[in-house]
Length: 332
Ligand code: HEC
Ligand SMILES: [Cu+2]
Image (tube, rainbow, N blue to C red):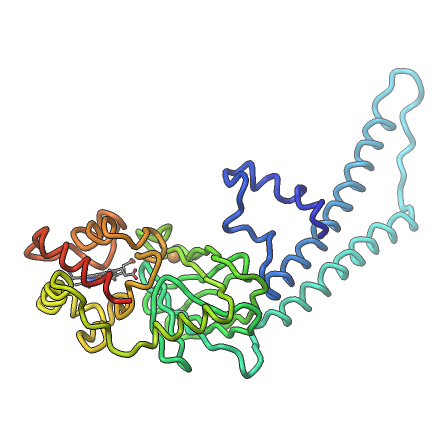
């Protein structure tokens, strides 16, 4: 739809509280997949508007023309008007064809088939965070998915526990994440940016905190990111605080839930091998800074209700937490 007409569909959204910016708007497509959906939506929107206009006009005409009048005789009712009946049977049928054909076409066009050379990304929903695996690149990360701009991406979506649903509106339609089953989407992002999304299938206490971010990178920054994430074993701790943090990590319950390559094998929580290179933690809910890392490690469920990462027993000392923060931040 031409930019000038965006206001028609955008006004209700603005009213509902995202005035000014549209971080999760479906009406600002930034990929071929999202553009297909947008086109279908716009087409159906104008059909619906035309139907609304015709029906309301006829209604108003009928109300005004055939209203009860004290003067003249009552209006003559119409029975069995063949032309009228053919008309109001045929018109909706024709309109439904104009709606159905593009709908079916879009369903097939967005079935999730990507070209063979597409970048493969596996998305795994967990209560309440997203894991991203790049099987061809040997990358396992969490919270933030990186893809290169202008390249086809094949996303395979599944779940480790209950049903979740993956949705980054600017990049395309939602797909359920179901354990033991793989759903696919495919898209080619058309502009560099940081696109927000959200789990869209109620999945428990922190469903609303199960956000996601897709970072569409220019080719060179994507390559740079791949190089960091592929860095093999975690960087050796730099400085004595980080050194101490590694020791605390290695003797705490952390190792049972988190992988740090070369240090620990846990798979309950996000892979932390390069956690220092992420901008956010806890599936995009908090910035990855010292203050948030410290309060997260001290008491994750108080920041994110229901978090599977419980408080450590016995509780960690402030010094231990500071050391852990230094260590995690050194894991670039
Ligand atoms: C019982 C398993 C478990 C234990 C033990 C555990 N974690 Fe976690 N951790 C998780 C889970 C699950 C998440 C994701 C929570 C969420 O976002 O909902 C997480 C998230 C994190 C994150 C955020 C990572 C990101 O990219 O979002 C950090 C950092 C972290 N844990 C550090 C630690 C440290 C340090 C310890 C030890 C003191 C520890 N964890 C112990 C399960 C655990
Ligand atoms: Cu959810």
